[in-house]
Length: 225
Image (tube, one colour):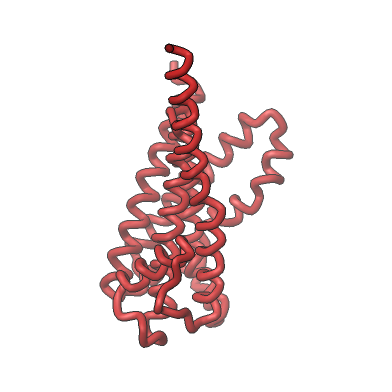
């Protein structure tokens, strides 16, 4: 008999793989200069990812000790996993340029959140799982920020020539080392601030972890002597 944990693990793994495929699909379209949010294959892929995440969310709510409290605490996540672009396409909904600008980045945000949450669910029981999760979160955020920064800045920023310029910019900004590239769009400037904050919050975790390893090693060595 299949238990709930096995089903939940299978859904987590499936969502993780599909999230990776979504990232790859968005990356290929971005590198090719194709607007990924108008690609039919992309819409189909993100639709099934949304369905899987909705099923997973429903199971999490059902298994929670306080279901309604869990639902309320994670309501924002539910809003993010609704396949808006597919629904708009089905019902021929025409959006203003401002609304289209907003909704076309929701799948990127959804993919990042799903990727980090699922990675945490898979890694939290492993040794050093928390550190690995922080690394996944940081590097995923840098990569996603680079994609968004490239989409926004490529045609308006003379300092941005290709995606690798954006990736370099994101890495330098996250490490607070600074970069010669400067954002010119409003969203690009917001991304700059978020990258700096993420670096300042997550990079010290590595230092603390390494310090703890060294301290534990010294304690173990002293106890053996």
